[in-house]
Length: 453
Ligand SMILES: *Cc1c(COP(=O)(O)O)cnc(C)c1O
Image (cartoon, rainbow, N blue to C red; front, side):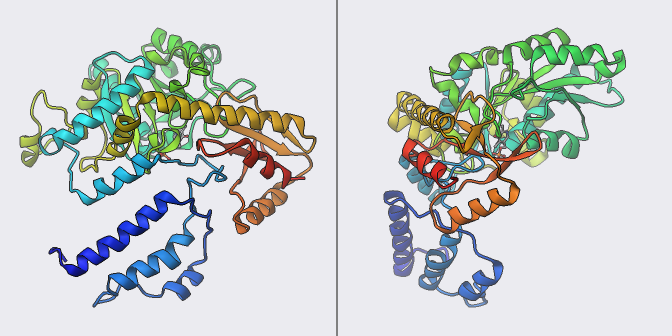
């Protein structure tokens, strides 16, 4: 298993062939199968004696891979798709072939150096100070959780270690589910929901009004507010400057969740919508969404990384050799210890293409979203529901109910034509296009809209 033989070479070659083919050709959209169908086709794959590489590769390539959707297909417009650049996807193969432990400087200095330059590009886009820094974690869920844990630790420290009866964080309805889950389920923290405006935006004014109705005790329990820079369902950016002002007045931590929309910071045509973001105490963006990195990759940044380190550094005798003062240990900034160098594919692509290529690719998706918006406004059978800020379009097909949407989604997927799922807005079924793939065209959107007539 651990020596490289003739047959290891043949196996590696056949896998490399598959990788090259996948990089070179547009993969079909594919579709899921039932467990029974997969069992009938693949059977029992784990056996005492092994299947041998040829049979295992064949089962993967012929049976299992086609049962996984191609998230990077230009007509995959559900949830938030992914669209890795060729450079990022290719470098991911190398990360897989190496055994880099990227949790500590001692073990992964070269990788951490490279990742930190990629983080610095993001910090500059946000407008964070030169001392800002952080780590690439698995996804927005872990990024949000790690930032909020650091926020609470900082609040406890600032209060001289005296805990209020309950801790509270301010959110709104459109805040991503991962934030609510992190707070309520993982951290046992209360959520204060403040109503959004007509586009679901959290505003400083709405928070102020809500605060006026709270007792001094209730107000004192609040330690942070989460603002979203690009909501997942609506693609709308909160009133970041207004929220930052309220956070400042009250001494709260401002966390900005830009998992999807943070990428728009690199696009001059929308940059002004993010005014105020530079005041964030912590920020996340998922390069695996709109920054063209493969899964899974979230950039987590702290304005003052010492606060991240104070919350997250793990202490144990056997970790002493890696906990060296002055060295940048990525594991100090999130809830995880062992870490794949998951920021490296993103770094490599940035290094190869330069940041201007990122700006251009993001602007291209924004232009296609504007084209899609015009198509929706021109057509009689569909209606735009929310004025978009970024590259998510939420709209309804006039007179359709939930079953109509679901039947349409299933038909498009079965035909391998497109993947567009139903969503919900103000309790009513609808659908949305989430456009992060520079290969998606206005023609793609027009053809999908035509299937709804
Ligand atoms: C996708 C998303 C998340 C969750 O990120 P994962 O990478 O899926 O864990 C959090 N917040 C927002 C706004 C998102 O769009």
